[in-house]
Image (cartoon, rainbow, N blue to C red; front, side):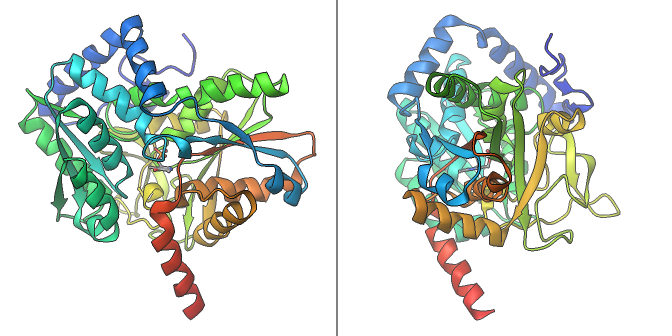
Length: 400
Ligand SMILES: *Cc1c(COP(=O)(O)O)cnc(C)c1O
């Protein structure tokens, strides 16, 4: 077995597994059995590929960022255009895969958590397509910040339930989803949005997202006759990054995941789990790196981008870092903001603020690499959703 596959209990090395209350064991066993029965089923994969192509708009282009490359004067930069998928981000790939699984498992009610609302929108979209009941849990603080996405979900027929506990953000929405799931497991499927949570979610989400890297690898080979030297992707829970990286793990290709460096190095000011304050711990069912204080309490986090603003990171990333296969860096709010403007003005592509963290790192390293070098940056999503945040950030900076 490849060292990049988890063991039967969902561990990559010491990371992953299933740390859940007794009541969740049976639903997770049922989900694992359901998924493994279909994982290499031809008919299921044919159906998945059909919706990826005709509903989500795949394959997405691999685009050469000519002007950005020229401006930076180093490595040639290619963009994997997940922003061009239906609903505007990579999250739709996973949502399609899981809703097809839910249908096969005979579930009629879908629940999901959402932070910025992107995963909620992707889930509400596939629920509308398949006529399934949809409940989205969202922290009331996030509901306030992401009015437009809340409205989109409602238009798509979903019920958005506000979560008023804790910090009233993503972590609390996940807790509430798990609670709902335990109560309603007979007819309900929990459609989790990143490569996080208890086994089998990190593996399953990675499998569904790995279409990104399979396409990119094939597209790059066809165009250049070789493999790229480096891959760069932003890392929240880690699904777009592992989706790009997975097909290249056995190749001699450098990979860099970029976390949210936020507004400073102090605990509470960032979401860089591999930086200071990140220690091995357990959060929401999985063992991975978790930002925590000296007493082991989960720390508050901050990022300009809601999609990267989470205290833990998918377990496969912790493993890939521990064996030295993937490098991790971070980009600050300011750097992401600058990269957001740079890509928009130079290439005519407005990236999501999450994505802008990956772009920021590419901008940092491309000039240090030779002109023959090549890199692919995962353009995980489009930035329309972020224009208000960017305007506010700009105003805030002007006042400072
Ligand atoms: C949600 C989101 C992310 C972060 O999630 P991952 O699971 O780390 O990919 C990144 N980019 C966009 C556009 C997103 O919507």
